[in-house]
Image (cartoon, rainbow, N blue to C red):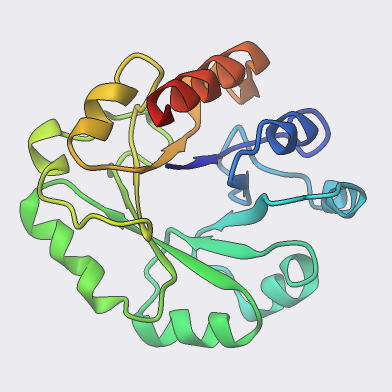
Length: 202
């Protein structure tokens, strides 16, 4: 099972997630988000020993300039939530970042869009809410492709994790369900979620 936690605070949350062996640590670069990262804080990331964790920059239609100035030396992956085409995905990949491409799913036919993005390393199936904590419809979860390159986001929590894993998902992307208040991660909730994951693995 793989875990990605999104909307992390660069100074407060990173060491905990590394210590808990969270696979992917996501940082939001989206001005309208309460979880938006201040660009000056990016430098803090270089102080961490990542061990086996990867840093992910979560973006919406990023420009080449933004990627080169802020992301290339600091992140392993870029997560794309915009209107990128498969060709654009390849352009960004050639700059030196691995790609997570988000697909917004409202209905079953939306799932097939992932087939267009052959240049992406990971496909993230997400609700259309963009940080609105919408729940991913259970009837559509069983229709998703399975494997470690396909992740699911949308109101996943300690409470429904076991049920969702039984539907075939083994790559979980979380954000708001691990917060004590908007934009502020609860370290207790993170620890409890990882404990639950470890229970299921065993």
